[in-house]
Each structure stands twice: as structure tokens, then as C-alpha cells.
Length: 243
Ligand code: SAM
Image (tube, rainbow, N blue to C red; front, top):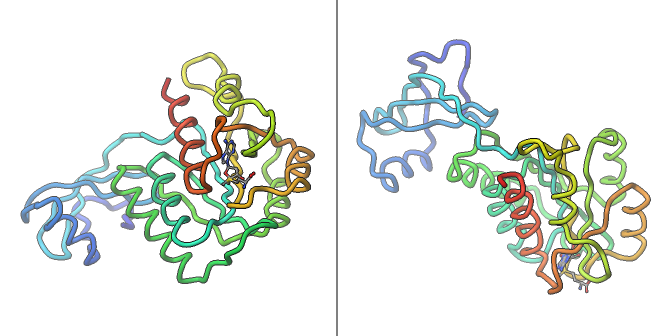
């Protein structure tokens, strides 16, 4: 919900039908009960539900349960509703940016309606996980376009490509090695993880990634589905960041 931060006190906000349903039917709140509004830009606000679509903002709340550094996921889109599951679960796990990738072996190209649906799912998942930041779901990029975005990001990004077969170090070991040893700090400013499609990355794609300073990594000795792999990778990032 958008909040004008400079004049928050007693600001009236309109709730959507879905939000009214969630407060009234799912959480069973009564008019006059307090609840938390997330503004999608990192802000949490204490608000009072007046019933129906009406709510009043009372005051800002200061919390932070985001991952210590932003994590971008490149995911080569799986078939069916697989990407919806990825959006929901990786949002719960703290992803900052999800880039749907069209790689050599990707077999689906999403419609604009699909993209709108993924963004709605991300909003719902961020709300349910009480996140401060709404993850960005970018427009789909071909793998070539995705390579080109790297030059904007400099060398401060710790980049990994998950490869299902081969003798590569485990992502967990790489993440542990990238910690500074001081608190929960990382050597890098952000993380980028790339997950391939059902048919896997092609050899030239993996070679190109290595040329662009991605570290090829393993997620273990079993082959994971394209839907499972991003969740496992993100779970490792989230766990290491809280150890
Ligand atoms: N048919 C592909 C193959 O044989 O290489 C398997 C692709 S797997 C279903 C889909 C993607 O999940 C892979 O491209 C990779 O990014 C990731 N993945 C799955 N299992 C993995 C593992 N054990 N280690 C690293 N990445 C994995």
C-alpha cells in the first residue's frame, strides 16, 4: 500500500478487496483492531482497520528482516506453473530481484498476464512473510540480454551459476568463504544466482558465465527440479546470512 511518508499521521488508505478479505476473514480482525501495512519500499506502518476498505495510518514501525545483501536470481523459466512456485517461495526466502531468463533450452515465453500474476504473487508472499521490501520481478530477458546487464553491476557482485552435473564446489562452501568473518558481513555488495531450465544450461552458456566471472557451483549430488533448485540455493543463502 502506498503511504505518503511526510504526512503519515492519520492518513486514510484504501484497502483492496483481497486485503479486506485477509483482515476480516483470514485474520478475523474487527473494526478498530490494529494491523501492519507494508509500503513495498522498506517501510512498515502501524494502522487501524476501520472496517471495509478504510484504514488509518498511526505511526511508522522500525524493523528489518531482509537478507544482509540483495540477492538476484536468474531463473530460466520452467514449464507450467513452476515459475509461480518459484516466485512465492523465493520471495518468502528473501530474494530481492527475480529475472525470468530465456536460455537456449527454455521452452516457454510468458505472456504479459503471466508477468502481472507473478508480481501479484510476489506481493502476497512478501506480505505473508512480513518483508519490508517487495521483490522486483523484471520483464523476461534472453540470456544474451542478461549477460549485457552485468556490465552495469561492476565487480562487487558475487556471481554463481548452478550446474547440475560436473565436479564443482558446493554453493554452501562458496557462501561461507565469502563471509568477512565479522558478524553477518559479506565480502561482496550483492549476490547473483543463475538457475537453468529443465534441460539444463548448454555448455556454451556455462562457458560464457565462467568468462563473465560466475563461479559454477553444485547444490548437492542429486539432480533437483528447476523449481526446487532456486529454493535450495536461496535457503542456503538465507541460512548462511543468519548463522
Ligand atoms: N537435465 C539437466 C542436466 O542433466 O543437466 C538437469 C537440469 S535441472 C532439472 C535444472 C537446473 O537446476 C539446472 O540447470 C541447475 O541450474 C539446477 N540444478 C539442479 N540440480 C542441481 C545440482 N545438484 N547442483 C547444481 N545445480 C542444480
